[in-house]
Length: 218
Image (cartoon, rainbow, N blue to C red; front, side):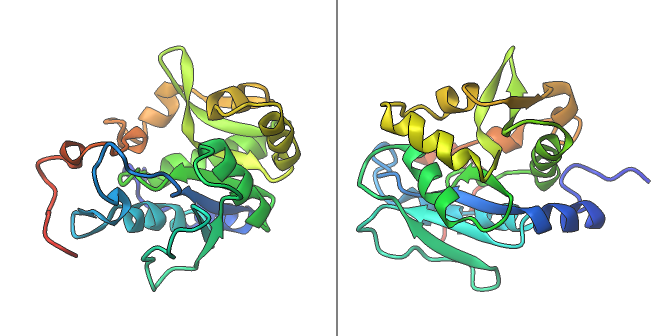
């Protein structure tokens, strides 16, 4: 029987969990949101918790990367989650990926942003499969003739390339991925699992939480 979008495929989940650690980038300043957006409630729990739960459907462990001086974030107590820290303040998401890859102990990292509350686990598993299927360093989701930089899957060995590119002044995750051997999951393939494209949704402003959101405290 075919599974619906986001429905858990147990063998695939076990395979991905054995090889991939989730990395959530949570070091931003939430300037446009006006307050700590990762603590903002979305359908009853903080945005960051929603993203962590989606990664935990695929990965046995999740690493949350925060700013150097930030307090430890609120984390779901029922998941295996630990915190890593950026080396310096305000250097962008590629620096967060560097910090996350340093903390990863599995062959792959599955990277997403903490403000992506509607990640679809079956799509995340496709990213892991795309890296495992071929001689590539990373995988991303195709869109409109190109690709989205997040979420993405990376081999842990990409740490050396990330360090080199960052040291040379690269700050763009898209530019970093484009310089790797990159597998792009075709849009029609991942949209079959996530027709409305919820996996790519992120939250920049309070209005992005949407009308369905329960704005009461979790």
